[in-house]
Image 1 (cartoon, rainbow, N blue to C red):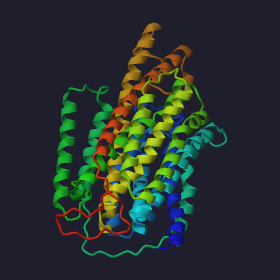
Image 2: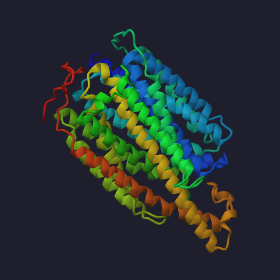
Image 3: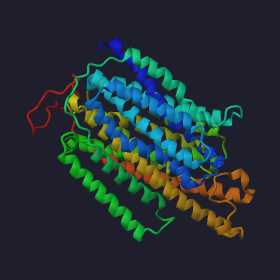
Image 4: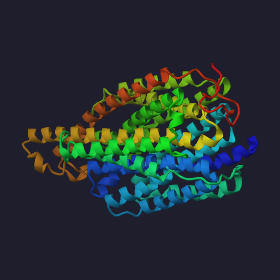
Length: 512
């Protein structure tokens, strides 16, 4: 495809990516009101987010592998249809159980869209030139994350719309993108015969990860950390994931290409992506809740307050993408990004329910800058190390681990937040002489239905507990920084495909 043809197709791809990403950000700031209106709890609040991430995570490597085996354009069109249908139905739910189930279906489409967009761009342009296009991806990420909370807040605050339109919003975008891609996206597909999708490996991975996340969600509340339930669920997760590793090393077409991840740079990039995903998704998803519940801002105001973080993502991804394309070197920007990310979370780890908003804005800007410099460049490291025929599986693998990190981060931090909030609310109610067992709906997020003294205790509890989440995120981001330090100083290749090397040898990459 010529540069002009790439740009025309890219416009449709960016719309698809925007729809997928805005579906999370537009809902995030409205979730307190959504869950409150549906009479949900803190655990259900977490699972509205986790269900989407979990389904997206489990399906991502499958979609990536399917992109290596079948028509990428057709797969993208199928994913758009799944995502748009689920988004429409999410706006029609009547309780949180239905919402969680449909958000899982939405996650199937979201995982497909995120990985297929990267695979298709990788099939059109070389890794070195891809740095410039990653700047566009970063711009879309920033616009969706900046515009999403603002749209979500405005929609939620508008009586004539309602929070249902947070889900309906993605439908017309998907329809327009589908029409555009049908006309502009033309890829030379080499039909492969005798292909076989590794459904067993995908099932084992999904089951193992799901069981682990279920344990994280319920441990400490429904059963103790040391209990037979913990033993059964952890042992089951280990067995399932161990079986998945065995299967992936044996099958001809593995969902997760173990032979690629055994190499030094893809392995380190995967570890760093896992850490960045855990820190970013796990920490940022609770910011909207903090601003609304702890600080008393409206959904629109909460969206505006997250702008510093999204502005950092937009600026850093655009600048870093251009510099990577000019120099062909990616390691310095990943190291700087993970370091800045760690520093930003370290600042946010000091917050409570009275923290100065300017200080919080500075911390959020550093977090956004770190994500913008590192997230897409880590994908480039993996894509640069594989031939075109493995591009989908490799892209799916690193996206899988990044999403897995986000899913684990949301689940773990959500469980930590729920436990700490419960303890702080119980202490506050006891100080008022109220029995914590009948704490006036303290497990609910509907503060308007609470007496003012109880509501004030809930606000302080959420504000004071949120800082602990960012401290955990800072530690996780620091692990990503350490992994980035050991990356090889390679230069990105200027061809779409990788030169073939004899079996068992490492790909020849120029040292920077």
